Amino acid sequence: MAVAERGPEVIPLSLTSPEEMFQLAQTDLFSEYRNFMTGVEYCISVLRSRRSGGPVRLELSLPADQIEEGVSERISRTLHRYCDHRIAYNQRERRAVRFDGVSSLWVGIPLAMVGFVLVIIKGSLVGPTGNTNLAVDTGGWVLVWVGLWFPLDTLLFTPLTYGRENQVLERLRRANIALEPHRPMA
Image (cartoon, rainbow, N blue to C red; front, side):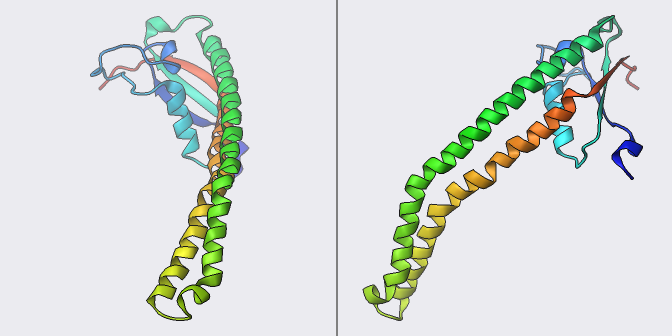
């Protein structure tokens, strides 16, 4: 079934005030309405945990006295700004991580070269067979792996986290927001 046919991905969220979407207020920790993370962090977590690219609908329940004219639009504007700022932050962090990966090659490449040299000349250092040969050979390959693993992991895989979060933030930025009063707890 296509995303458009399924409709939007709905995220229900109970808040004690509209501000709780972006920051946690000091409240009773034992309240049944208490959240232990901001609404935005909760939404990002929900969206990152699912494979979907469709529209998002936030169904926010608030105390009746917190629902007034224009609250939904205020939340939407603030959510848009928040997502823009976090996307820009993630882009800078992504560049910084790649820079760290390139910088770590200054240590990694010489270490890998030492490992390769040990693997190549092990026979002339310790003889063609024996436990010492095996230890030098294995040690050389370990140095190659250690020298290249961190730089390549940092360059290739770590930035993917920021890119995935930015995709979620793009979806969240365009979310439709619906407000409803809290339902009584049963």
